Amino acid sequence: MSQPNQREPAFLRRKDVQIRTGLARSTIYLYIQQGAFPKPVTLGRRAVGWLESEVSAWITERVRVARDHQREAR
Image (tube, rainbow, N blue to C red):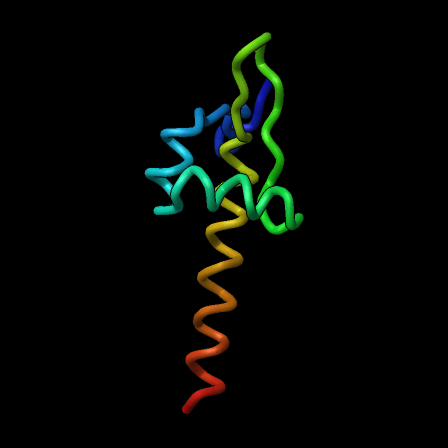
């Protein structure tokens, strides 16, 4: 039996990742190459997806870093 607050893992396709993050396709792949963004998971011969939880964690971390920098600038 699963816990009520725990969601099943879900994949986001590239266009969904672009919408969620506001990043361009080329920036996503640049960040992956730099180790600064989650790597996609192969779903099929010509299909990849990103774990929604990893993308959400990346977004949360970006917000935290931005807020920390704002506090330091004061």
